[in-house]
Length: 398
Image 1 (cartoon, rainbow, N blue to C red):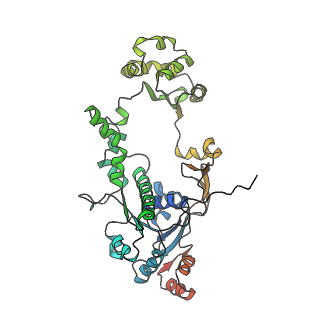
Image 2: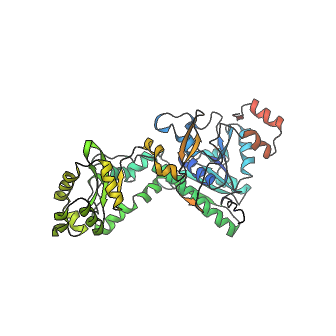
Image 3: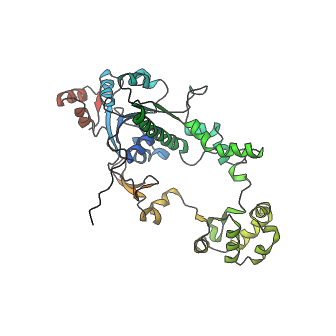
């Protein structure tokens, strides 16, 4: 058989220069980089702040900055801006997520750059799309509160943000999707354009189903902890030794299988529980019976029965436990990654395959300024020029 050569990644040959920090902007570059683009991360002299964050931000940098090169430039100095402009002149895409007006002050906004290169695609990640709110400072938590997501996640009277940076991550993903669309449009028109992605609008997309629930029923959606489930059995059960497990039976067929598996013939024959909608209406008295019946089983025993009978179930996992998840490890869903302190861990890859292959890590999260010299030489700086820029702290890093 002829040797099979892997297909080139779809965005190989595309150069991205990103002026990004934290999560939203870096996620856009992460996705494009994983898909093959050369992503150049322009950092301040002191480095992206996520290199130093503690607590819930301690893993940001290695999560969102693989498959990128790093150059550290002082954009407060004209020579730093000039170096950035030289890099941008070689780019297909510029991506940024600074406060409104920051890039314009530097002369690195879309209106300025498109005069130099009409084919440039410019991705701007902000809190809000242009409009009455665009002057506000937004965070993921801010838009979750004002966009209905915190209300839907928490209990009544206790709004609660989702347990991950959903809007930052998805906002960056939509920025990348917009860049992909702009690249295709450029093939057709020969011209680039500006792409705008925003936290608030992303959040509204996430809660659209609850908005449309009201449009369809005339009744406001209840928060998830107090909602009327669409399914008769769809809940977390506390079982033997206080363990917890999520169990579901979302169709009449699954209900019959569930009842037979656990010896619930009387409930299966009860006309009050004949259909899923009947079981939804009967949850007040049905669920205590089911909880009592299943309380003596261990979570592992229940999982085994549900898996054998192809019924939906889930252990209640904590994020750190996923490093040892057998499915993730068997399918190549986790890859070795360099942490900020130089140690090695594993990081989740993009949740899709191309031609049956996961998109891997071609380049570890970069050290600060790791590629500065080679990138500057590529755009015409001599070794003496680079040495001078370093001496004057226009260029930083290694």
